[in-house]
Structure formats: C-alpha cells, structure tokens
Image: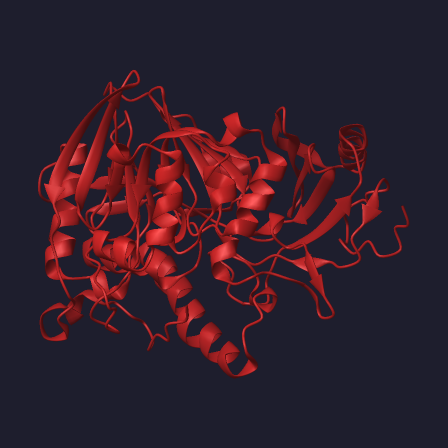
Length: 451
C-alpha cells in the first residue's frame, strides 16, 4: 500500500491493504472549545488481523503505550497513548477493514473508567423505559411525536441514563414524575443526592438530548453526572444546506454543548468507539457501531453521512443475565453495517429498542437479531396511524404481546438472575404550556431546532 497520503501526524502509517483516499474528520467532544477541534480517522480496506496486529506492534515500537485492549470473534480493538496523543485503532474481521483514529477529544480509557468501585450491595437491576407524552399531529413547541429516555439502576444504586426527549416534553408534571421514578429506583429520599454513572447519548438530535439537559438544569443539585459518552460527527459530512449551516452550529449545536458542560460540570468524557466495553458496577456497555463506521459512501464531493439519524451509536447492555440492544435512530444503512460486522447472536438480546420511533423499516436488523421484548419509543396513535407498515415488520419477527410503547406509560423491568418483574406507572405530562412550563427550558442562547 502506498503511504503518501497518510496524514495522521506523529502516528505511524498503516502499510498493508488499501488506504481510503480521504482523511475523515470525525467530530469533537464535550470539552472542545472550538468546533474545529476535531478527531481524525484513516480507513484501510482489504487488510487482515495479522496485518493489524503487526501495525499495533509498530505503534508500540514508536513509543506508544497500550491502554484498552480487546480481541473478539468479530474484531481486534486497541487504545494507544503517547504523551498527549491518543490513538484508537480497530479491525473488523468480517469486513476486512481497519480504522485508525487520532482522538483529540477523549479521556484515556483508564481515566474515563477510573478506579474500581466497591461492588454494589443490591441484588437486582432495573431497566426503565420512561413515558414521554407524544401526540399526533405535532405542534411546534407544544407537542412532539418522538423522544426517548431509558434508565438503568445498577447494584451500586448508580444510574446509567440514555438520551432524553424534546423541549416540548419538559412540563412540570413530566419533570416531577421522572424525579419520583429516579427516587423510587434508587430508594433515596427528597434532597438526597443521586449519581448518574454515565449519560449516554445515541445521537445529536434535540428529541434525544433536550429533556435530559433541561432536567439537569432544574435538578442538578441532587443529580451528579460522573461520565458522558457519545460520538457525534463533524457537521461537514451531513450535507447541511449552506443557508442552514451557520444557524445549525451557532444556535443548535453550540448551545447544547455549552449546556451539557454547564449542567454536567466536571464529568469525564469519552468519544465512543466500536469495540469498547465499559463496566459500570454490574452493568456492561459494549459499543457495536458508531458514525465512524458509517462514513463509507462516496460522492463527487467525498464521503458523507445520511443525516444525524444514521450517526446513532449502537450499544448492547448486559446485566443480571439479561441484555438490551439500543439502536437509537439507526436506519437501514446502519443495519447493513451491523449485519456485515456481526453474526446474529451478537445482536440478539433480551430487550430490543425499536429504532427511530418506527420511522424506518429496518427489516435487515429485525430479521437478523432475536429479542424477547421490544421497547418502542413511540405513541400507539402514531404507530397505527403513520408507522403501521413499519410496526408490521416488528410483528412479523417478534412477539407482539411483549411490545411496550413509551407513550402509553412508564415501564420498569426489575431483573434478578435473569428473572423479570414488570411494574407500570401512569404517564404524566401533556402538551407543553409556555405560560406554565417555560421555566423548565434552560437555553443559554436562542435555540434553532434542526431535524
């Protein structure tokens, strides 16, 4: 392989296979003060595990120290550190692809995970699909048709929180209900602090961020966020129209990042990469796919992504003999990559989150992965009124009696040694009332919603 186009300064060139002729900018992180501060990635096709491991030896010979390391049936995954330089490299066996990432945004894996904690004393885990009000038709700033929020309570009583809904769902009643549910999950009393071991965001759409950010602004005095986990792309790959680009960056993107830094002050940040595994007490979080795996379609203007939904980071959770596959807003092309990377058993799970509020068919995923229970972040009305065809795909492959729609109610699955107990809570909150609920919106600048 010619290495004339290798552009990761200070990082040895990968000399086997076919180097993709574009250096990818793959986005920044929580503490990047400048939008232009961004990580970089080279993609190598037609390579092998032997060549990848030999390259890892070259990194070590060049003075890089190994950090996170993992080998599986599906790939080899490595972290290397040299001074302030952090490199994450991985090889996917079924695809024959290696990716070498100069990560300028993350903590090292060891810094992010931190010292081992004392194991928790509780003997069960709880997975909650929180009910968010959704209606049809949508009414801007009043009624949303999407949003999703999941919480896992671990043995040590800490929480793993996934995503969050829209501004239009930030009502007094919804905030009070979430606080009550978190109190019940953790068994804590009013005023007692609760700890979010990690907030994980699948992708950077407002219906997956804003409810959580605003909730933290209102209740951050009793909620401490230890870690933030996400992998957001560089916007140049999203084909945003020039007339919208500046407004998107200044009035949407920067606003969210500033609020996250403000209300999750001091949290450790990791830019999630495929192959990473995080252990938070008895909860294991495995990263299966990120936007870095999706930058592969080439046009006359270079590689690109098909919007923010396809940048969803896909993870698999494991706890107390159960698993949960979180798809975010994954599209069919995400499914193509997942099927290409993994065998069906790697994607199968006890609980499956139906992707993108049923806005996509995603039959390539649903026909491939098995699941006992399907969690659907959508309303029953919109499911049958607008998403009926996509709902039928779920019905084709899974047991409809084990479907749970998020806008029906809040549901909590208490799991102990693989045994499940289900509890329901009535959904609270309705259309957003600006006269009553606007104090829940903690915007730092005037936000411009972009979907």
